[in-house]
Image 1 (cartoon, rainbow, N blue to C red):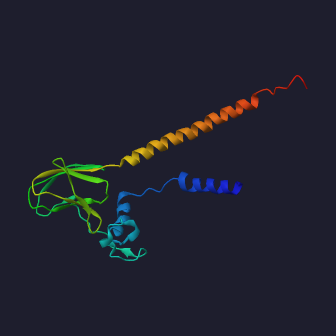
Image 2: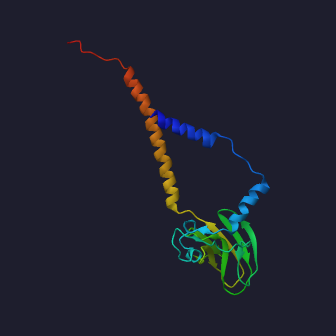
Image 3: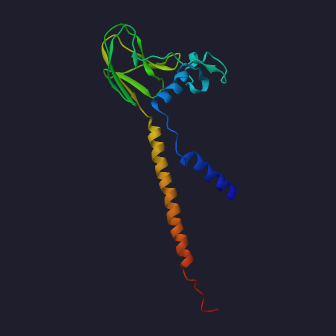
Length: 190
């Protein structure tokens, strides 16, 4: 038991407490440069990014999706970014032919796109990016990540459960101490 504790303490001191080696910005950028062109690992792609994986075996490397600087791509339609946050993205798209707009995020079913009070159809592109079906008229697209109700419910249940566990531990230790200090009563008949 002592050996296991010493192993844990040694690991914590050597890996966590020990000071980090900080790199200068140019050194760090030089280390990242080759990674941008290197192949990716299939397991890191979402399941719907099969085109990027080219149906290779899971242990083989694949080329990542083509890099682009555009956050939104809508063929033959101009757009303007209004808001771009982690959980909410808003952009305006000019009128034109009905097309699929490609947004620079991976598709996930909880991303909901709305325009003019109507929900727009979303689907994954071949490389896993999010595609939004745009109507022909000018629209302001509100793309929002919405957690399902079950996530909020599970978080609430988790908080209540941990509160109960901690309460039992705290109040259980008080009651056991109180029982230890109670005097033992003896019958006078003995």
